[in-house]
Length: 277
Image (cartoon, rainbow, N blue to C red):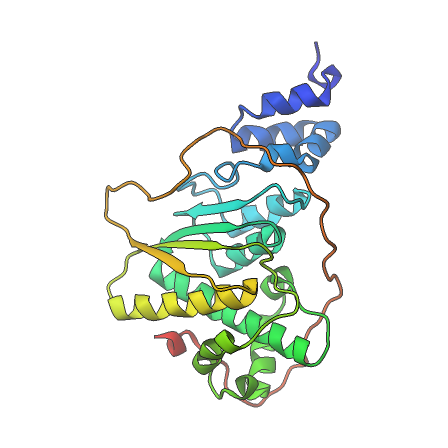
């Protein structure tokens, strides 16, 4: 029997046993299968499926091409991004697609990349605060990742970092601020594993900043669980099962789609990564 004649429910059960590359190939083989693959929440409920550990093909370009095809739903509860060649932009594109549903995030990367992610999340969060203060529609992770990031940096600098004078001070102030519509609606657990760390003080500072950001962007207190990587040791996790756990699909809430891009200014220096050192 041709696969196109098999009932969708049976095809989905067969997809259950495929790996990521096979699922993507299946989706590319026919329009009907493409719709079935990317529009069926059951296919993507496994937190381990989307980002195979250490897969060097999971780049920013891959994220930009594949992740937006997946219909937004509330089935993806966990994101595990372990030793992937992603930059801050790739992480933000992932957050844009799944922030509304995830309750747990696990990242393993080197400290330098983590500091860059914290830097850009701080600018993003600061712009959310500015827009809320001015009663304007918030930007999304995707908009920040694709727009000229310098414009958002300049907008924050023009506000004197919301009166805090520096980006570092602004990050500390997030503990006293609250968003009306935080992007991480359900986040409760954030786990970080750092590699190539030679400065313990730098790591502690970065983790504290990320903890404040996660709390601000989720609207609830978040404690960052950390772990130092030991070469050859297993990756700590509470999820080793390769069974694809299915969750009841829930209707997605509409997100702001209007675009905001602050006007470019020539004054005020831009925040730099060194401010997090």
